[in-house]
Amino acid sequence: MGLEQVALRDVIPLRHEVLRPGLSIETCYFEGDEAQTTRHFAWVEAGQIVSVATVMTSPRQIDGEPISFQLRGMATDPRLSGKGIGSQFLQALHTELGSSWWCNAREVAVRFYERNGLIRVGEPFNLPRVGPHYVMVYKKTAGSE
Ligand SMILES: CC(C)(COP(=O)(O)OP(=O)(O)OC[C@H]1O[C@@H](n2cnc3c(N)ncnc32)[C@H](O)[C@@H]1OP(=O)(O)O)[C@@H](O)C(=O)NCCC(=O)NCCS
Image (cartoon, rainbow, N blue to C red; front, side):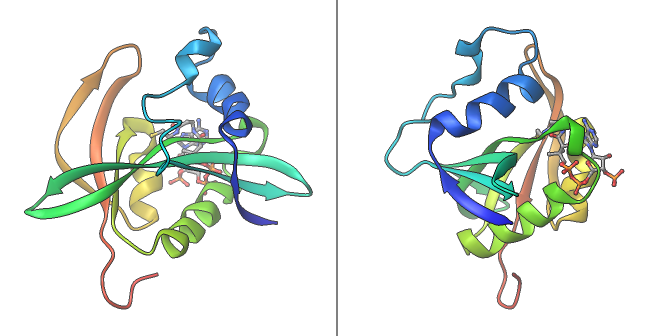
């Protein structure tokens, strides 16, 4: 059980089922998915991928601090959601990345990210087809995981 770096094709099934249900498979591919600096991660239990997320280089200034990485496409197998898998996965990612990162969080996921050390930045904004989002950031500080 644990964090594994995986191929793009391995994250697509959960992205499709959880994040783009009912939409074509093409909508599951993000710009930058195949960039050399992009890394796809999975949380694996008993040989099964149960949660996925992708980390891309996507620099952004937040409160005057340059943040290089963006987390995208986080999705837990809906049959297993609410059991702490996403939280374990994020804690392992904090360690693996060893640096600050940001994400666009769906409103429903804000509390989940807050419990895992992220903070909200600014006002909500709307993403077409997906709804209200907040920019959130995990700030790596000396002594943090
Ligand atoms: C958000 C998500 C990755 C969390 O994974 P998880 O394995 O369920 O995480 P945990 O069990 O550690 O935490 C569950 C928390 O996620 C929240 N959550 C958000 N969307 C959820 C969903 N569709 N189903 C269940 N819980 C959800 C729950 O409210 C819960 O928070 P709470 O304990 O404060 O009530 C997962 O629920 C998911 O894939 N949600 C749908 C897709 C999504 O919103 N992804 C984030 C895009 S920004």
